[in-house]
Length: 556
Image (cartoon, rainbow, N blue to C red; front, top):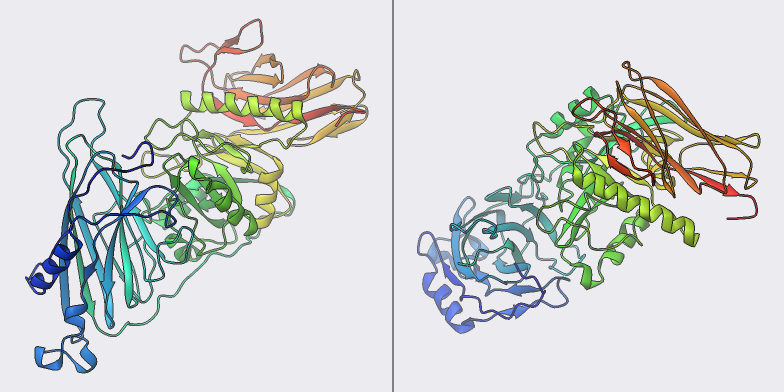
């Protein structure tokens, strides 16, 4: 992996060849002319990249009829050509390695497979891991139109034709011109990485165009109400093992009203979700943008839209792609900011974010840390009078035993429609639940007025304010009220998990109040805070609200 973004190591020369030996002499001559050529792809992608010598099929495509081709120099329909490329990448190679492939006219389908070695490494040393994807003849410009698919390290082969494509890839014409296979060596062992890429072209007529089935942007709904939804889900269209039907069935079983499709670095699943949406389930299209400095969710993208991921935090590209999402009406949400996996920790800051994911899947220490960071950001917003950042929780479910809807967001929206749900999330009119069994209402009342989650209550500075939480579904749970001073009130629920907790404060003492509902500790005790109001030890989260803000009259 290239840790500093500057790759000054040599790359072994491209070694073109073919499975059947055809064109080998020309390919070898091409390699000899190019030698050890390596191009730093500045301006193509934000992160450092190299471009290898091109692979050509032009000899076969331009052969004359005497060589057995059809009229016009195109090989007969159904005929195939294969090229095999091998090479070596050293530790410290660029983030992306581009392999140009010259596609001639008359190609019906392209098939690509790849493999790389996995030498044994000592404990704690990164082993070889290499992703793959492809861009078509429209180019590899950052944010450009040439994207045709990405499968990361989940697949070893893929196919693209006009009629269909491997999940993760976009069906469409295999047009004449320079395509680029992209290798993403995000971990390279000390021994280096030997790779092999095989490209097979099948000639013939393009075949019928693939028919998209995008989901509608509105479901039946209940008018203005609270709606439950999981906004971070994966399928076989990236690195998940669930089919779209499995995800939609799982969402319905979890009592969800909406979901967002967020496969890694590809929009390919958007085109199939229409079959699985219905009056009872709104399916929104999105993407998990998986960069080398953290992952983020682009929620509510127009169906078919794709967001580029080929940059690091120092490349100043994140703001550009955040603007792209915002122009399309979507939301930008950093995901699992303290995930321990390589390249997953969040390094882009929060200036361009609309919300942040603080709870991802079953509750862990990572989530505890994320909530603490989010709470610090709340205090900063109050202190500076700037925009505050709502919290979200999602399952990030990929496969069993991941549980769809653990956790999910409960959003107050005008309707069960994409724009309405996104508006509710953006405004922070939402709370997070571990399951649909957990229900709550959270309000602050004072001076004859009341405010709910994500709202402001403006009252005289010393007027009494009653903060109230009604909750059910957390047997033996612990309720915590947290303000900009830390935890200020704690109370236990009964064995049935129901209760009403009321705490009195003033706007002079609390700039905001948020609620947590925790499960008991492993030993059955409720957990406790210290005398400064900070949590020392508590059980897993069952529910977490966005804050109610208390504004002393005369202040903003």
